[in-house]
View 1 (tube, rainbow, N blue to C red):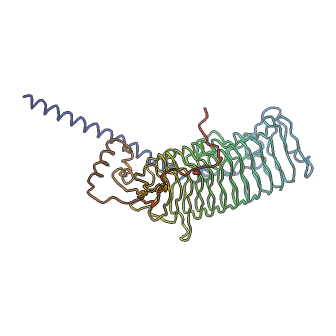
View 2: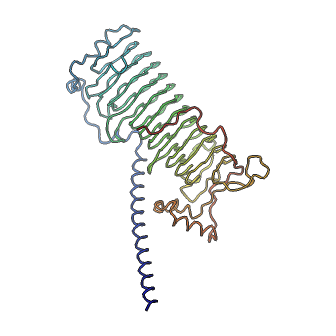
View 3: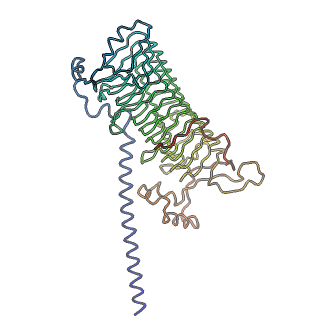
Length: 474
């Protein structure tokens, strides 16, 4: 009788355990499916998504727009003051509210009182349109543009060369600076935000379109959609702090640009290069690009990029590679970067080659390298990197491991091949399956990559040099 009772209890216990695993598995499957769907939706929205969706309303005439604008009491019309300023002169604006729009078609300088000179757009259209070369705008607070994407309602629409736009504040404007065929301008030390809208419906902080040789530097950019450079070359984007946006910097069909010394925090994607060649990504800090679409630095069919001395910290994917380099004779160089505490250090979309990883430090990543297919990343060059999970000896004390660092697809990689298993990543159950397979594998594991000369110690000069690391501010 006691044996029957014990057996019945054991059976009930096993059934209860099986039911528990079934419920957990169902919840995990649902969570992963939801995350995948949201991730695909987010990642497939390009920088022009909201510009064409929904369909654009009928255009409005200037008279209609003027009738719709609403300004605070006492606002002073700005355009007559601009018209009264001589070519090459200086317009000093007092600490008042000025009513936009304003068109600047002659060389001049406009100086405001920081925090006191406010240019209000009345909630319709763009505030300032600059068509003259050598214009300087400084000390202005630009606010309250329209909210229409098809007319790119902006704080400053720039159609000229050699201008300087510094120490301004842009708030409640859909787009910040919109450059179109505008070369050799300087956009410096501005604070730029967008409207309080869902992320994909905000405007861009700086939109550069067919514009070359511009400097975008030392700006603080928060809660915008993207900072985007399209069809443009020889631009320098340096020293910017970009927070809580979608794409920190997005280069599309843009070549020979330099992205140096920028800090990114809690954006969906830090930097993304799409069909963009011969660019430099140096000394940037990219933190907390999380979520299903989270990427620190992403590549799509981009070649001849130098990625040197960057910090990729606590991103869902530190680096994401898709068909890059695309040029059969091209390359991408990753050197002296710190790739730390990411979900995946470097994720390859497919079996691809042409990338070189040298003297990088891989520290605390859940997985160092993955390939989202049945291929391998071993056709790329891996040499003299530091891997914190390498196991071996350095018997001659030359700082290089006696045996290669090898990354194999054991059972702990099940979540890469079966997306629904991501819910169990790092769970004791998956770790147990992995342990058993390593004891006696029934099939040969797949080699993901091999570094023939792993460094014992982390290189001293690895990571960003002199770029301030951003942290969440309360």
